[in-house]
Figure 1: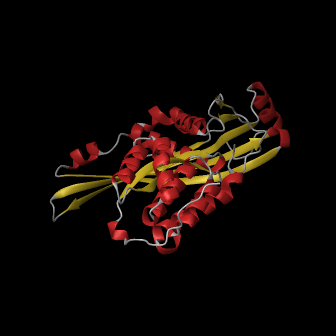
Figure 2: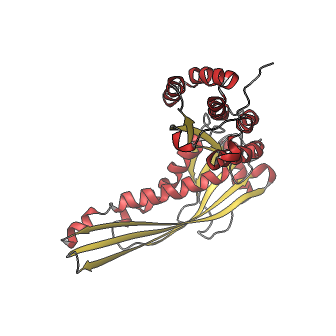
Figure 3: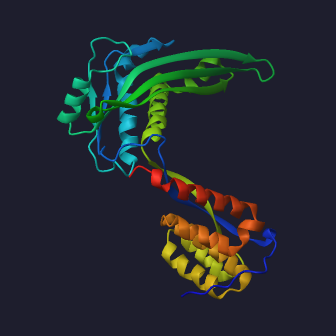
Length: 318
């Protein structure tokens, strides 16, 4: 049985050296996907687009708009650990009309069976509007051009085996770009092209929706304490380089033997190590054992974050 120094003396926080490290955190989806769903079809019903775009160049991009959504959705789903090795099919499935009515269940079932998928995600309706405004600034003697796109997309997630619409969600996004120059034409030219603006806005919409229905990885930062001596500083450098196991050995040594101040911060570092290994109970125990969660607000906030992650662990889509 391991024994640890219980910290009893803590120095002022102004003397503490910290390093920030990035870790990947698995974020839970808002919608609980049944375990039976192993892959899905991405679909778009043709002609369900409403456009109010100032540029006549939209004609060149109109047919590509659904693919901007579907390609981004495909990438986002593929980044999820649940679907990482699955083949996602992208299909254009015609409806009888361009209304917002659902597909027939026979159509959904036949498509999913043909693609060996258990779910169908459809972008049922797309509406895109834009505005361009030009303003002359008398104080700076230049022109400012603002360009905005309002992107509405209606998503539906179908489960044919249960004849269930698992989710129906209207995603609205507004995107703004600004450019200034002494010449109005140069300000216009500094804005993104219509292609770039449409691809970005459609892709962002799809990414936001996919985060609603599948778990995904998100990069977050954590604090590593590199204080008191060269060993702790060296361990922090090892962690920033991804050599977590080597850093763990140093932190464990000081957590066991102290002295108390160093032991407390070594335990906080061990909590981060436990978190990256998805050992939330262990991470929580380390923070509580350190005693720092009571007197340091940042450590207290980290403890709360870990407790919330621990509670949500079972809701992650696997």
